[in-house]
Image (cartoon, rainbow, N blue to C red; front, side):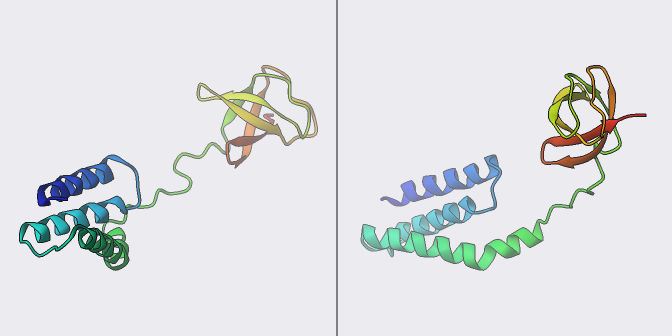
Length: 144
């Protein structure tokens, strides 16, 4: 591959890294392509198989040596666990839910799957308090 093709590939890969939610992997492949492009421009890259070998080696070395440092440097602040919790909120029962069974409730304008944690059945229109969240299933009990 010619030097300018390596450069274009490198910039495209770096752009892809910034446009996708990833863990900073593609960026190192882009940087390696730019390095190989610069070495090729200087006439030091040798045959094409060596360019690809160099590209692979620089990519893996970049990931191994710099990825962890990069992640620590731009560490995003952690969101508090209780920032937007639905535990304690009230949901409206959409369909009857027998005790221990799954059904549908509405909360904040969205329908949710809910499990009736209480001993009595929930009827349509009942208000139920959210007591727990397991994945996308709300554990609810009659609000009263």
